[in-house]
Image (cartoon, rainbow over all chains, first blue to last red; front, side):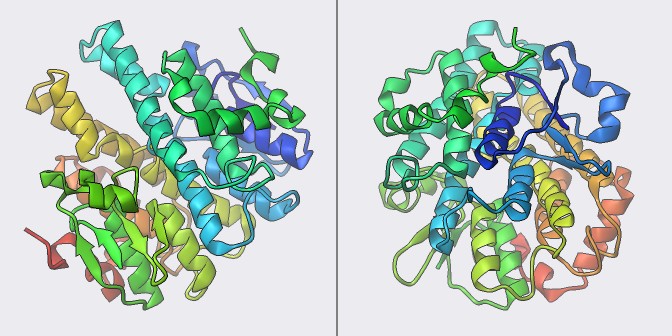
Length: 207
Length: 207
């Protein structure tokens, strides 16, 4: 059972990964804007109070999207989310971490709420989020490898992290036309149902 | 060749991992407070402008501490940085990501500089960094597994991410006595030269 939220970029990543693996998992929505991730019942699943959380049949709960996807790739190896060569794997992981560690956590709901609480006006908060997204994507534009996807001709972890972040960047008004290589990767991903079906607008809890 | 900075938590992680593996690598210091990571020569190594970057003998450059350590664990498997069981591996990775993705990037030099540029006074900036550290460590206090280290009786990725973050938390004035389990893990880590020798104060570029 995947505990998530339609618009959460981290939940979106795990949805893409599950789709690529051909694994169907029931979804449970926790409304982040209403703060449902802070309810005691959810904190028992994940003390960090973040989605996604993947609850296995035996009650084990896995958290953190990158950890969930690494587990998924270990227990359901095909199709692989990482290439075989260790250096290339490191490059794919680095690309993913630029977005999942250095970009997305700096512009999530909690951080933006904190900036507002510190007295920043709404244009400044939006500019913060746009700047964070633009910097992360600019690095990825340089770090992307060769092929029709981010690294090679099959989709994987880098693509999975890229697509939701491009979605966030657009929401915050970033001019993504500055990143032609990333947009070409995105266009390639959109040819696959695994990516299309994972989009926020296609989720039952979409608003 | 490891491009780093004595006080960078992400460089510190990689130093611990290399020490645990028994691998000696020459270090090159880039003075973050003087902005040396933004110089063109460094940006050619890492377009993101972040340390650490591990430059291999053939000129390949690996970036992002978690990606560097995953590569290291793949090419030098012993002693392993992750346990064997896939679920336990996922729990170790999640613990590491709470710190490396959701904590450290929110309190690095660039973010704190940005908060100052937005007009926040120094006490507010320090309070931001303290709060970020306290939240991450509070989650990890709950997420830690059993054993003398964070997960089991051998040091690994979770311990590697924990020790530098506890260092940061203290620098920002967090009362770490609230995290007895984490402090016990830290005490265990400090019995090992691999951890002691990686500390900022033991580096040639320490100030």
